[in-house]
Length: 297
Image (cartoon, rainbow, N blue to C red; front, side, top):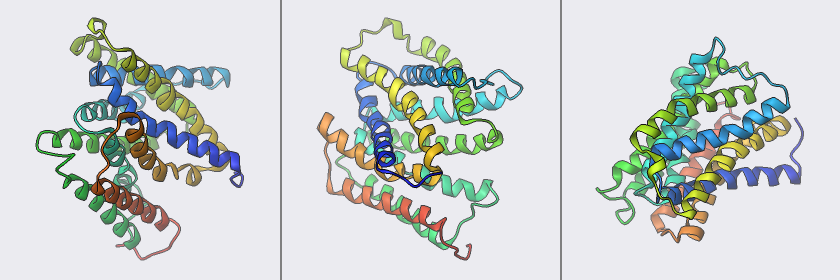
C-alpha cells in the first residue's frame, strides 16, 4: 500500500461521483422502464467490463465451479434484490433521499457484523455512531413534504435494499480467499441469469417505447456505476487499501443530494440537510471506532 497522492484522491472522488450519479439516473430510467428491467440491464451491462478485465488479466471466472451456489446466492441478494428495491423506491421518492437512505449501509453493516463475525463487536463509540446515524433517518422520515403515507413504503424499500447489500457482503466472506475480480464477475453473471427471465416475464421490455433520456440513463447505469466503478474500486483497493476506499461512504450521499438538485431540480429541505449531516456523523463515528480501543458493550 502507498500513501495517498493527489491522483488517488482524484480517483476516490471520481468513484464517489460515479456511484452517487446512479441515483438520479435510476430516477430517469424509471420514467420508461420497470424496476426489474432496470436491475437486469444494470447487472448485465455491468458484467461486461468486469468479465473483459478477467480475460485480459487471465483470471479464472469460477461462476460455474463447485462454489456456484454461493455466487448465485450472493448475486441474488447483493445485486438482484437491492437493484430492484432501489429502482422500485425511486419511482415515488426523490433520488436525493435514496442517496441518504442508502448511506446507512455502513451502519447496517456494523449491526449485522456484531452478530455474524467474531472481531466486529459493538463498543460504546460504535453504538453512539449507529444511534446518531439512524436518528438522521428517523428525522428524514418526519419530513412530510417529501415522505408521506403515499410513498413511505417506497422509501422503506430502499432501506431494505441497503440491508441486502450488507447481507450479501457477509455472505461474500465465505469466499473471501478468491480474487475480487473473479467474485465480482461471477456474481454479476449469476445476477444476470437470475433476473433475466423475471424481467422478460413480468415487464416484457421489448414492448416498451422508452424515451431517449431513459435509454441513456439505463446504459449509463450498467456501464459506469455497476461496471467501471467496480474496476476503479479494484484499483484503489490495490494501491491504497480498504480504509482509504471506504471514505466514499461520506461523499456518496453528499454528491447524491447535489446531483439530484442539479439534474432533476429536486427539493432540498432543511430536514434533508440535517438528516444528511447526522448520517455522515454516524458513519464517521462508526469508522473512527475501529481505530480506538473502547470497552465493548
